Length: 429
Image (cartoon, rainbow, N blue to C red; front, top):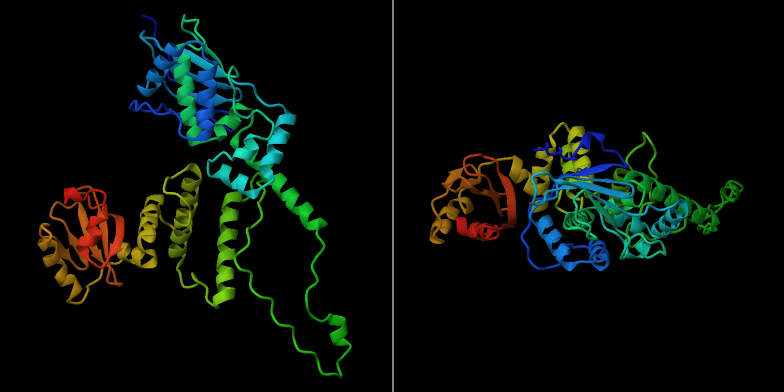
């Protein structure tokens, strides 16, 4: 029997123009659309509208749902993977797509750089609609996908190529930069070009805009009136209604990460606006560790994307902690701010009263007798815990039984039973 080929997964060879993605696990067939995003669905539509045999498409979708597609490698103009069929040896499958020329890329980048929100959307792995409709065929149409397979089936596409196309739609759902790589440019290359275009547009706009005259008295006029009574100072300008959006920072080799600069500038603008309007710095009293947790918690979303993992790693290194410690602290901060973080890190001895009344309340709700220790009550199975904060709210925690690996869960509540009912698995109590 011929030796089966190895997987195409070779992440050590990856770079900006070559990306390898692990195989997707099997997924149940729910009869719904295979892709979730509008650009992923457009890819599936191009596949299905250009196919010549609906039966082969159905078999290919089944192969994709059953996890028959191995690791996928994407390079400019090419998607490549091994797909397992009915024979022991998997088939080598590739799908080709035309790459863009320089003129097409210039039109696409100009459209994307017109609005800062487009760049922010791409960084959040979203494909804005207007750059995709800028006259450049970013998304494939019927007949644009060119599948090829080492199997003897001459169908267009065969079921193995159809399976790879369906799985590629899942890649596009997770990261639209895969589509841009197929069209010829990698993620870093695209972001750098957009940053330069945005910075150039901002510089031109600032140069062409006449500066607004500021109220006041010219210094030369004041100095000429040394023997006169000086005029009163003009009234201060009113504070702006909200912090302004920071400019887009260009990326440069060896320079700071433009996303990190944007996040720090946005945070500094918000703090300055609060100080200007209230006279107080909302985070002035934070320690370095608390401020790192606050910055990480401000990152939108709950999933650890590549950008989020890089942010967590750099913040954790700066404060001498691990990314896992930072992730747990972020969960506590999102649960209750500074008090929630204190509940995570600082056990204390509450006075008699609210803490002592909690165990009877839990027993009255047909819950078992929780074990007390300082400000904590732990379920006898060791998988759920309640912690009383100094704000007299109860904070719920969960852990694998016997592992003492507690993570904040749910919403703080003045009632211990109420804090538990916010968990995802109240029936396990």
